[in-house]
Length: 457
Ligand code: F0G
Image (cartoon, rainbow, N blue to C red; front, side):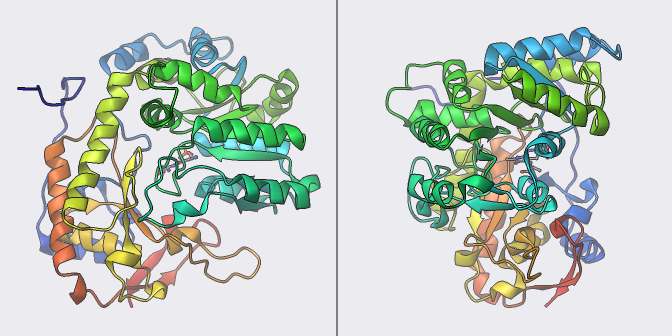
């Protein structure tokens, strides 16, 4: 008999989680203004709000915490991180920041000016926020296949070369750089192929532009290249990662994802000139260049996390778990973005609740239903997140209206995944009865989804 697949680690420390009753959850979610961000974590049984900063560190990472060097300048922890970045990612210079959006803030302060256009593949919301905050705009050049959840395409994070070249040709003088998000969170944790990264580099060179990788889930992207792209089966994850980054000038990193730490980020580049310019903003916004927004111990854990996170066995365990949840949902006929992404399963709320008007926030309604059903917290990636157009202030309705179930790294077992699947199946079976969505009561002027208050429509 062939031995079944199993995790590449065992568990050394546990944290108790608690089930609640439906009555309790009804009360809590109402008090939370139907916004899942407003819940207390103890009101949640299985928390799939995000895979960001919610992972379980390894014993090696925990031991690194004890070795942290908390010197203000020149700490050994800084050099540990520098060596890991040089060895694994191929960049000579780096600036630590407190998280990914801080890296965006620092880098964009150097590179983006009012009126600029930043093409890329479905920019993440903080990336778009930092672009629009500077009165610049983001142009989405993702392939069309990404926006149809029923189409199977191995690399739905890919950039459409024709869309990209069209903006480069027409608006080239306004474009400081192209940004590629690996994996592409907004299109469903979908990877970008090596061939596509290479193509972006070639177009960037043709038009004299820089390429930035938003790299939060770069290792998961490398895993998909190894599993799906011809010519990479026999390469190690680290070889693939190095080739990927060879096509970028700069990377921003939210280390809370693929470096498996609870807090941290960085910018890395090979240009000394860009490093010097970005250093000025890093010192202003984050901290001195050898610690940025991080303590020494956290830089140590991050450096170790980059090694942990680029091991094939770890990635295989991780991505197979996400796939497991996805396949359970597909067995029940529940519509999900296919193929299943690297960090999350994205449920297609438009196809789940077709009778609900988009103005009543289908994905948010579904996420609230799932919380009510089983205390499972997902997150809306739809019209609430898409926010209003900064100029017209009209609601933007994205092509995809998704509920994301993001799986923290090394945290839950497949039994937890079975609970999530069964809960969604129950909702799927009574989906026709869900005829009332949500309406906004109060919202912030930018990135409203975090703090929005809603009520039943
Ligand atoms: N880029 C991508 C692709 C991300 O997914 C995120 C965060 C960021 C940048 C910003 O990083 O949170 O460290 O400031 N994504 C989280 C999520 C919040 O839930 O997907 P950050």
